Each structure stands twice: as structure tokens, then as C-alpha cells.
Image (tube, rainbow, N blue to C red; front, side, top):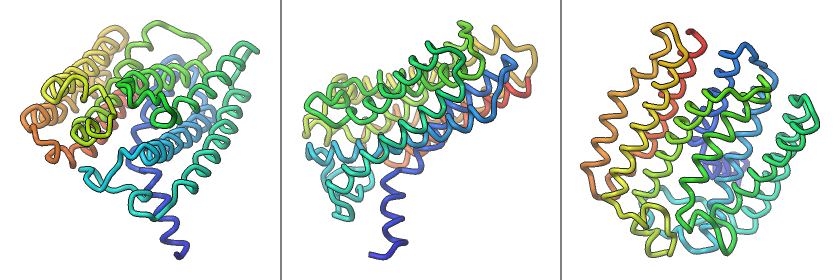
Length: 302
């Protein structure tokens, strides 16, 4: 196997399409820090690096956990993972998970040491870093992997919304105004919507494998209604923040994404065959990123 093909295999296993969405929470947190007059470019860059490493760690651990449990089979609707067709082994992926865990901790510790103002801040963020690493791994790894218990949505809301957005804001502004919890909630909901499309698409395979995602528990029809509610609540969250705090029309730039979100939600609701949702996962990730970028741009310009 040549170096180019080896790189390509590991690059695809990292799922690069998920990385921009993971960075959206850092963009929003930093835009909010700019709104508070406390933006710090080094803190933002270190947060970017830490988030990328944690996302790749989560993707690697997800593939490894599903491989060990036999959840990802040749029948899956989504694209086959490298480990499924033998391009990499379970042992290689396990070593990669360990390496990414170490790199994530080093990056997160560097961020904490650079940005902290008191020993309490340092201890809290080092603790959050360790918790984030453990959470990224135990989504599918372990006897009680919470992704198999229907808790994946809650994990994504907490870590892609509140922890990431509020964390990167606090490390720059060193304050916690209650208003920032609202866009953090919206950002988390959009990330949950991406996971929800994945779970709607894989509902039959997950059910057979004993992976009791929220969609397996509530059913496809309720899952499609739930998807629309996620998008509606995300937009409402951003709208509440805009009305509460902004004074310029730039503040409402994110509303440009609403027609696209509506079209997407309508398609998901009307199409019941999971295979029809295969191209929609990338679309939802793109819409989430677009909405978050427009919201962040509105903060900076407004």
C-alpha cells in the first residue's frame, strides 16, 4: 500500500465532512466573545485545533466501537467505512484512538494553560477536557456505550452546544452572561439535527444490531417530526438572541437560511424510505454550518 492510499484511507476515516460543523461552535463562541469585546485570536486557534482533534477522535472511536459490536455491516445505507472492507484493522484503529486521545489532551491542556485567569478556571477546563475525551470514546465503545442507549442526542447537545460555545466564550471573556446560553442551545440543536438524519437513515440496521438510538426508540415518523422541531427551535433560539441584543439588520442574516431549512425539513418529513436520506446527511451538515456562519457574521458586523 503506497503512502497516498494510506493517507486517503485515514483521511476518509476521519470523516472530513464532519469537521466544519464541529468548528461552527467555536466560530459562534468566538463571535460572541467579539460581541463582548473580548476576542482573542490565539485562544480561538487553540480551540479550533482541540475541537478538530476531538472530532476526529470521536469519529475513529465511533468506527471502532461499531466494528467491535458488529453494528456496521455491508448492508448499511451510508458509505462503507475503511474498517468494514479491511483497509485498516481494528487494532490499528484502536491505536489511532489512543494517539488521538493523547493529542486531544495535550491540545486542550495547552488551551487551558494559555487562557486561564485563576486556578479554578484551569482545573475546571482540564476536567472538561478529560470528560470530553471520555465522552468521545464511550459513545460506541464499552459495554454501556451511551450511543446504544439513545443518549447520543443529549451528548451532542451538551458538548457541541453548551460546552463548546460557552467554553470558548468564557476562555476569552471570563464571564457568563445568561444570553449566550441561548445561541449555544441553538448551535447544539443544529448539531443534533445532523445526528438525527444519520439515525433516521440507519434506523433498520441499528434496530437489528441492538443500537437503540432515540430514533429506534420513538420510531421513524416521530423522528421526522422531531427533526423539524430541532430546526424550528434552533432558529427561534437565534431569533430570541437577535431581538434581545442586536440593533442592526445584520443581526438577522441567519434568517436567509430559513427557506433552505424549511425545504430540507419538508423533504425529510415526506420521504419515509431511509435510503432516500443518504444524500441528506451532507445537506443537513451544510445547512447547519451555513446557519451558524450567518449568525456569527451577523454578530461581528452588527
